Length: 243
Ligand SMILES: NC(=O)C1=CN([C@@H]2O[C@H](COP(=O)(O)OP(=O)(O)OC[C@H]3O[C@@H](n4cnc5c(N)ncnc54)[C@H](O)[C@@H]3O)[C@@H](O)[C@H]2O)[C@@H](O)CC1
Ligand SMILES: [K+]
Image 1: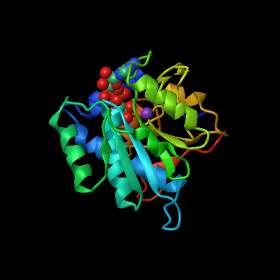
Image 2: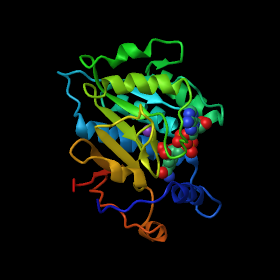
Image 3: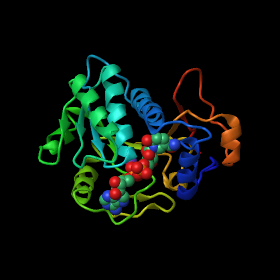
Image 4: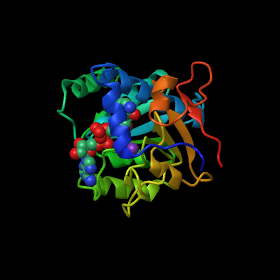
């Protein structure tokens, strides 16, 4: 595939740079745009219609990838879907995660914890798709519990219930690709800012690939060795053509 990628190390540096003293984005700003991008990709792949199922299960992990999922769920509700969030290991890294959960409650979006029966939402007759916001570019294999069992359950249904992965398919090494035996093979991948090397391992016939997280100017993209993606109008995502 010919699209440009940047390594996990460079992606972390890019994030630091965007949120550093010179540029000054806050994590909250970037997460809002990232979550909105993923919700738009869901809408594009599984258009909302009153006459069909509209339930979306969002599985959120303990870090910022999970935060993207929490934001995504709120936008999905605004787009007309019925999101349910499974958030088994809640971050206390900053107060912000608690605020995101409060916002979900404000939207009357169910937020399940580790003791709840989340697997009831893995029924393809009732759920349209699953958003995989478990781990992003900071995942280091091997996967620890409870996420090992969660991945196993998701893996069992992924052929019937499409999975939309946020930034990195969970269980994939950011640079090497699928490493965990129970890693997710998503139907849709939404790379944020710029694809990471593992995105080269997706099979374009099996997985639709979007780029989202539209928040850098050309000069900054060029500094990190890539060209801006061809976003149309106000869209927050662009679909990459299969190669
Ligand atoms: N500029 C960007 O591209 C932006 C990226 N964001 C998101 O931030 C993500 C990176 O966030 P983080 O650095 O917080 O990291 P992640 O969300 O990828 O994961 C870190 C968390 O996972 C846990 N973890 C790592 N390996 C594990 C294992 N083997 N078993 C169990 N737990 C494990 C860590 O303890 C930590 O809690 C990106 O992938 C992206 O989704 C956005 O939120 C904001 C903007
Ligand atoms: K993910």
